[in-house]
Length: 94
Image (cartoon, rainbow, N blue to C red; front, top):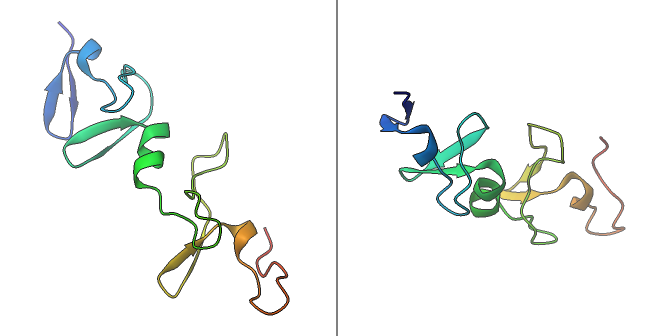
């Protein structure tokens, strides 16, 4: 019998599922928060910080594992949304 261990809990492979969408997480990337496990897509929807400019969650670009964001005065921005307050030119380059 195979079992999976994650966050100090033990699961049957078929029981290791996203707390939101129910997809089986056996063999795919996952994340945990508040004693629950999530597929990466749902984890970002629930816990990604919103952009202070556009309000959308700041999540990694498709195919990327890491997230790029700007943090200024305890506020998060997408790189494309961080602009000068006077002329509205993009401040960051990527």
